[in-house]
Length: 223
Image (cartoon, rainbow, N blue to C red; front, side, top):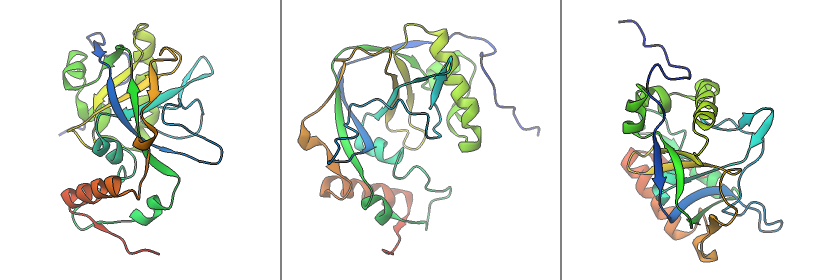
C-alpha cells in the first residue's frame, strides 16, 4: 500500500473552524528562575529558539509570541517532561532525575476572557479533510511542515487568538497555543503563587509517577 502523503496548507477543501475558549484555569510546565523572575507562568515566548510543532512562529520575519498550556497537569507533563517517551513505552526507564534537577516548574494560569481559537480537534480537522495523525502524530523532522500549518491557520483566521487541539501525548487533555499579539494583556494572568510548583513537589511528582506507571515505564537510577 502506498504511503499517504502528508498534506501542506492550504487544505484540499474546508475552511478552518473557530471555537470559543471559555474562561478557566490551565496548566503549564515552563522554566523559571527565582533570582531573575524569568519566566513567569503567564509569559509569552517571543524567542526564535526551539523546535516545537507550532513554534517558533515567524510571520513576515517577525516572531509571534506564543504560550502553550493544557487543561490538566497530566496533559502539561505529557507534553513536556514525558514528551519523548518512546513507542512502545513498556519497560522504558525514564531519566526523571534530570528533569527534577532542572529549572522547570508546573504552574497554573487563569484565562479571564473568552477567546477565539482555531479548532484542531478531530472534528475541526475532519472539517478540513485532515486526519489527526497527519497533524499530531509526526516527529521533529516534520515540525517545519506543521509550523507552516500554524502560520496558514493564523493568517486564514484573522479573528483567531490561538489554536486548540487534543493532546497527542495525552488525548484525555486539551492543549492550546495562544498568539500573544492577539490576546489582550489582561486576558491571561498567573493563578495564586502557591499554584506554581517545582517538579519535585509531592503533588507534581505523584502525577509523574502515575503517568509513568500507566505508560509501563520505570524511573532510571540517579546518575
